[in-house]
Image (tube, rainbow, N blue to C red; front, side):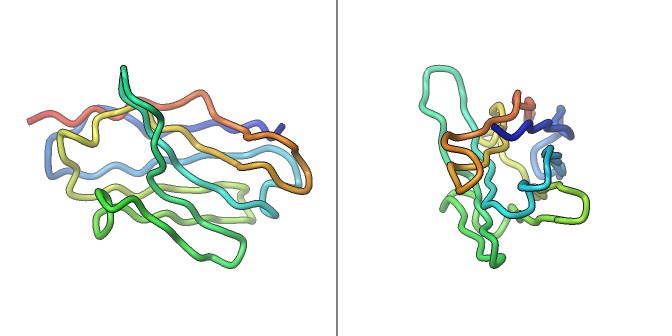
Length: 118
């Protein structure tokens, strides 16, 4: 599996912004699709945003127009810029690399807490 380390979470007021970072290990990280997911207690983990090797981006309907996923292959890092945050964005955010030609299973980071206060 790929080792993933997230950072950038924290406490922010509604309407504010945060930028999450996820640094991956290994040469193959830049050769894989990547994504961000989030989870709140008692609910299933849900996709927030994904980016593939060609730069195609997909977003959950709830974050379209507010969140932007990007990647810097030279730094082995994927980002999630979150603007106009809402209370319902409060969750633990996880970086993900799906199964690919280099790893047979999903790789997940440890998660970073994002709390949006009113």
